[in-house]
Image: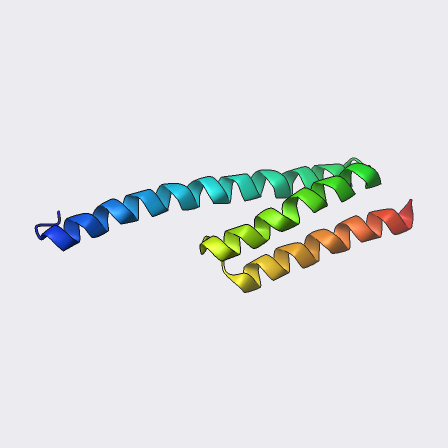
Length: 90
């Protein structure tokens, strides 16, 4: 346990940031899952809408420091590729 005043403050900050990161990561997983479910369900319009909702949240998570920018770029790229392939096949 922290004994110094500054270490106690740092602990409090870490708890708040951890909770915020967990919430952001959970929100991201939900949005990514919605895109994947729409692709699996062969619904191009739903997949496109889910992708449009997911991409800004992924970018926001990068700005907040929740995920790395390369991870975000990879996620967006893979999701976009799935949605585009669904549109081409339809």
